[in-house]
Image (cartoon, rainbow, N blue to C red; front, side, top):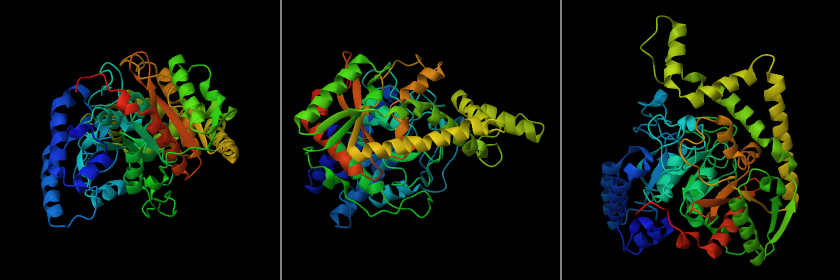
Length: 489
């Protein structure tokens, strides 16, 4: 039995039937990390010894009948911008290279309550700013489908670790597509929940009105299970919504008869790779065959979403990262003779080029004389984007688009061209602007065996609809049975 190839719900079943122990599962993943991490470079910090020790404790408790959670003893990976008490939380930045978090994020606490085992902290673009995981201070993560290609970003370490079977599932964060785009590039499932459904307490902020924690998994069922764990109101997060608790696995009915799917034509226009477009069109035909009602429509405000997103995101990043000044938080330079030099040198040496670029852009759009022209205007357009989506959901249950205009690109081909890199988010940012849920699932591969992702967008707090639509397609298409990553197991 290849343990690392199993989904979490399969591992859950084998634990319940006493076919596997937590120690056997954890050891399989630890061995896999030791074998393949050097190729993939998905982790900033590994916790292999600690994980094995905890797995033994959980097995002992299970034998005594003291385990309440059926998921107890299953490993997980956590993106390195989610706080973990007593463990480094670096945001893949020199600025926080030695930061040991004194507390847990709310989602981390929820994982611990289920007795999930933390295998380590996963690599990312520095402070979640990037679309390729090339902007990490520590290392560049590779895509398991082709080690010369990027895994996407900023949750590239999380997506690559799941695709390479270094972890059975992982947490990522999504500010403008940072869960969905790497999931698309790595051929896995990535879910960005509705803004406010999952607590952001303990997530190191990039853009507070856009950030959202979510699951990256092997299949849709696992995404629903992990969402069950992490969703819910949190008094520590003032943006957390107080809605009734749901069991998202009950939404997975493998039936889309009568489901109304809208296809925004703007997402299939110029800039979308032909092979990506072809696989999406085939997926649309699959939905029609399964009984869904599919219709093309215009979501013209989408053309303004990318510019709106980068103005708002950079403005909020500039504000949020102001605390890292060499005194209150983060790296402190040794080269200074006065306070001004301390600030300047600490931030110049501690932040990477992409983070500096976004801080400068954000400070500019918030500055006197430009605030009304840029930031205020972007917030007005944001309202229009929300209204346009509201109008679409009066008619459709789910919207279907590409997740990314292309498949994963080779390392180094876009890192020096910020505008080209930003275009990788063109299909995903509008979901964050409107605070909606979105899921990316694989819908095929291109001629070079690189995964292609399909995005399903739902109305606020209607995760059930996109999860079921994704699940129904997944059961029909069977991506994991047909395709495997290119690197040797």
